[in-house]
Length: 57
Image (cartoon, rainbow, N blue to C red):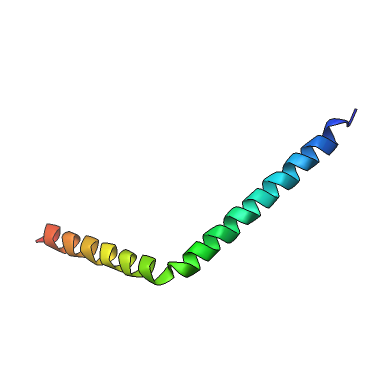
């Protein structure tokens, strides 16, 4: 009895298309805000490194 395979296949294709669309939106957002995120990440990283240096002293 493999009646549910066609329905699950439809669900899988919907899930994959949704995931693909989500990944495309993420890639577009990442490429669009790439420099801003990089600068923010560098600021956060340098601030954390600075705080670690202060904690060591």
